[in-house]
Image (cartoon, rainbow, N blue to C red; front, top):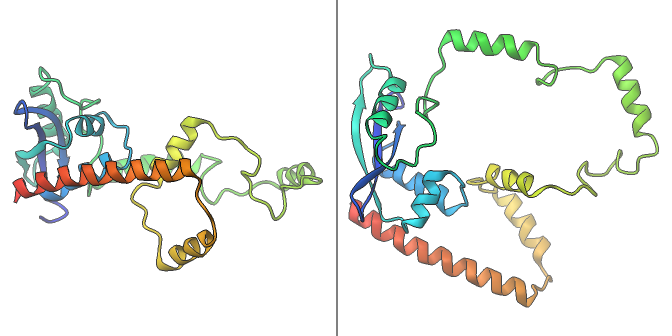
Length: 220
C-alpha cells in the first residue's frame, strides 16, 4: 500500500462480533492492528486502547471502504462513524481529525503560517534587550541558573508525569545511549520491593504477548 492510499477500517470484538472502533489508515491491516496492540501495551489511555486491553486483545480488523483518489477520506470516516453510532463505539470524536500520511492543503498551511508568525513562543523568537536584561538580573544568585538542570528541585504533577511518559512511548535509544545506561546501573542493587514489581510487570508483559501472538496467528 502506497502512502497516498487510505482505507477506512473497523476494529471488531471477537466475542460479540460487534464493531467497536472506526478509523482511517495508510498502513496494511496487519500493521495497523499491531500498532493498536503496541500502544495498548504501552499504557495509552485512549478509550480504544483501554477497550483492547479489557478485551484481552481478542479483536479483529476489517476494511469498511477503500478511499479513492478523488474522494474525501474525512467525509468517509465521519460517514462510517455515524453509520455505526448506534453501536457502543470507542471513538471519542465524529472523525476526520487526522490520519497517517495526510497532507495539509495550501490554504491550511497559509493559515498556520499566519498564526505562527504572530506567536511570540514560536521557534526563532528573540527576546528584546530589555527582556534579556531582566532575565539576567532575575537569574543572579540562583544556584540552579548556571550548570544545573532546569527541573532540579521541582515537583511534577501526576498528570504532567503521565504526559511525559506517553510522549516517550515507542522511542528506542541508540547503542551509545544503551551502553551509558548499562554502565550507570553497574553495582546498583535493587530493593526487594522493586524486584517484586519488575517480576509482576514481566509476567503481565509475557501474558499479553502470548495473547497477542495467538491473535496474529489467526490473522495469518
